[in-house]
Figure 1 (cartoon, chains in turn brown, orange):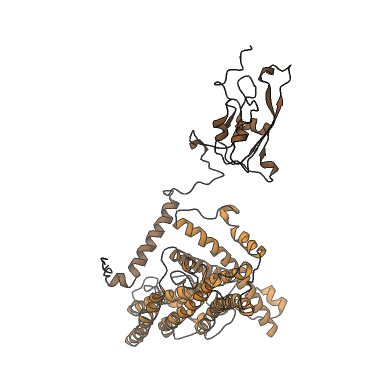
Figure 2 (figure 1 turned 180 degrees about the vertical axis):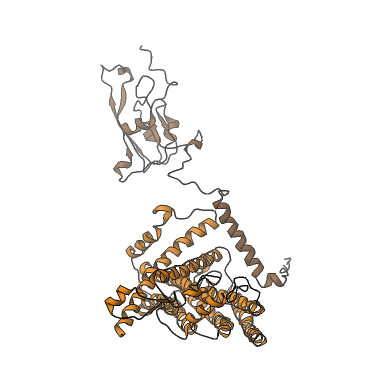
Length: 177
Length: 374
């Protein structure tokens, strides 16, 4: 194998007694302090006070949430596809029948309880992808915190609170047949 | 009369150790973290209290509340002894450092306790100040070596071995480096060295002689050369003495995990930490006393304060020293976050081949100059 002899750099006297390079180094680090105090250095974001929220991209995958449509109808029809697809099994749906006197009685089913365990959720977005009714979306909320496991389970009320209203796309239930 | 001496000494010890050195240790850790952050374009701890100023208290509480683990494989006696052996010498050396001239008690207090004696502003008024400091402060290395050995683990062991080899390479240079100063002032009493600097100008200010703020005195300027050399040698050796970068071979987080304190936790680790920073503060104080006039103001402003002074001026002298030491500690921190660590053999070479010889030649140079300008 070919060997390559690396020559050590020849240092002159002032480099050998370290002092010049020490002074140079001290000046360099002091320059960093000065630049920081003059506000010329970009320092790390101070998180709870400053947030990156306005820069989140459109495709950002945050907490999953349920949405209602323009008539105030909950879009979820409790088909449980999201529950089946969910890789960490974070979603639990208890379906119920819609009573006959309800204006949306022909939809037949709605979730009685819809729970997403946010400790389990991996924000993969498969629930959004699989939903035939466009009822579940991943929103931009990312700071999901709680002091107990029970607090970390988002129930139906919480999910609609995060999700809000979405209009358009699903129109098949609108005109009465 | 004896009780007066004992009580005042005890008060001085409490004030210096518990009100000056230990709080400034806590806050030099804070400044270490802030300044390192500034150098690395960060902000550092700024959450606990305004500007993060309560951070040291939070850190102290954390140390107290942590579990104190004594691993099963250590030699318990020496393992427990070592942290104390690091901290105690660092605190004991502050006994001979003068932090003011002499305090005259206010009249009502003199009447109350029935004595007219003044209180010297130094804990132990020894005639052999520097020798005492060298003798005691080098004992701190035993703590490190014992910690390394008693931990019965490879990284602490390497740290301990390095520390002892480091000590033999800087101690001679440290001792010899201040000999020129002792020759110039002709005294080993630190209080008298400070008093001489108050009158004749600080050791490192060549253009300031007795009575003139900007004078051109050939002797003083010529003597500034050896004093400057001895300052550089002394500072280099003090960095090694306090185990600070670039000579922190014993600790050396990047190679030896934590060096000699790898196996330590909780308050025992905190003692090592306190010891390192207390040594740094006392070392800075020593350097200030020898080269920057101790508690005095520059340009003869303190020449009138040499005798007995009132409590207000005594406090002012104390604060002057404190500010100078604070600037020195900042310099220590600044150097730590600038320089890389010396290699083991490079330190030995620097100590034995360079600093030792430079210090020796410096003594002869000083002697020659003193004879020439007699």
